[in-house]
Picture 1 (cartoon, helix red, strand yellow):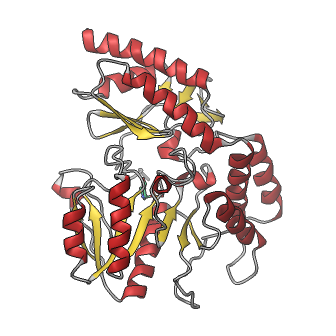
Picture 2 (tube, rainbow, N blue to C red):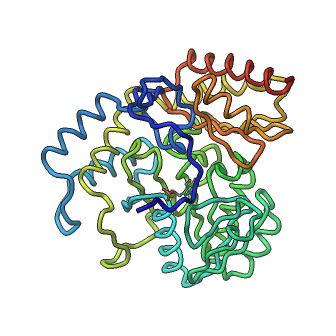
Length: 379
Ligand code: PLP
């Protein structure tokens, strides 16, 4: 059987990872500044994480959600404490798309409405809120499974407010920082005004922190740079450091009833143990603070490179935009300098490294990057 070929692959097989480094099957070392789409938060194969998972694996991976699971409770408590959302409830799923689907479901149950507002260039996984990341008609088409989605320009509060004032919008869904769409940050004042407008019109505000959450932005959640408390917050990616797990943080105004939401694998024992280990390590190693310090340093240094058009981001979620396509720069970084980076669109390099990135690793990248830029843009 062949694999269904829907994304391009580099001809590299990664066999091992330690901290911010990965190794291919020939033992060649790579600096990982991408973390498999923002998934690696605490670093590859952290010894504490490996120990906790191994111990649990020997006992039980999963039993059904019809019995008590103490790990779900421990995870909820630790997540509440570290994120500042102790009064919210947690519903566990397996991925970012699933978290957003469940958030939209909850919002429609609560409001009895089906209209959703999302933003141009947003990405919420393969969900009812669809995607607006490219102009390719084959893939932009919103997938409306019961939801009618209206798209607005990011930060255009007047147009959003006008639509909300019809009092027929179920939810506004917005990323803490747009990731796939090019590392675009919603303005603090926009988020605050949006939150007020949602409350005034009975609209549920969903902040998608699947990519920007879990310490990546230098705060636990990127929206915490603004003074808002969203109704629903969705999480995944960095939550399990590679072990699939996602979730929804649900404001106290939602009342849970049996059968309202459901899942087979969501919140399984092994996934919870992985997610608890991630939070323990984030706390002890102060990884959110590290993301802020190293991220600020990287951005300051990147802004000094004259060939770069714009540097955008918060913490260790960084977009580096060039006037020209970056394919060659990225390929040289990977094959000549052995550094993994990501991309959004054609002109933006996207950095989403593990949150434990050190200053010396940042400096190694900066030196290599400058060399690659010089050799590429002056050749
Ligand atoms: N939301 C955002 C902001 C994302 O960046 C992604 C994935 O890139 C998703 C949702 C979907 O997550 P998953 O691929 O785990 O379904």
